[in-house]
Image (cartoon, rainbow, N blue to C red; front, side, top):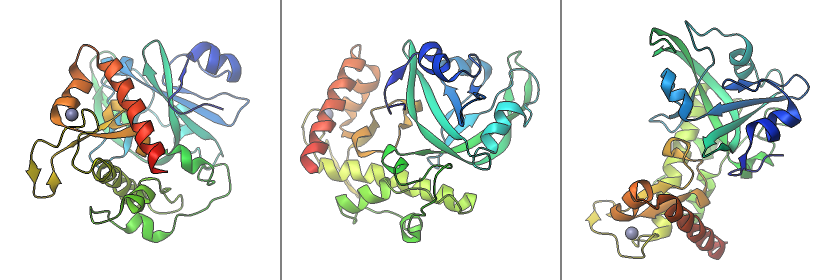
Length: 280
Ligand SMILES: [Zn+2]
């Protein structure tokens, strides 16, 4: 019902159809088994720091602008979404709208000291969420449908560059097991995140996918290229082959800092789409 990467108007496209709270980060429509969560620039003002952590897991700060956050309402809805058979839809602020990032599964949460709206330190709930790749949604990976576990080997195997392009793609696209421990889930996400970076570099084969020049120098682990995510989400993006591109440092800086970075990113998106189409 929402298309990954597409930009929606929060009021008309989301609340106009499904209802739910129009303000704040978490909306829980009463008549649908959905939870909508929103992340973006505005949160930064209140000390929210949504984004990927070092393990490649998406961190989402709960709701509550003043004082300690409580495990009630929207926060409770996120924590218990699997039990309550509700799907979490993640949207990221983009230009004048919200871009649909994907469905999420709850892994765990922790308490962090973060500033509230008044600048006072308080206990904030930070959720760790697994963003589900669109390709996996069909494979019954979501909480409301029948569970199909990924083969164990996929998520305990650490990817390395000796794997083929196809093997790395499979690891990058593998589903996180729902009934594994939080640690196993984190491991699975970490492997996926490593695999997608190795995948982009392997696909580039030593040539910058932006300007088609040879990588500027060699390293112990091969030609030096940097992996850029084409969708923002705190510059982590979802781990999909069409979302990553291996760039030389100049092209990578250009994608972030040039005056025409949006246009340049769009060129890169088209370029990767062409490369990926030729591969399949
Ligand atoms: Zn380049």
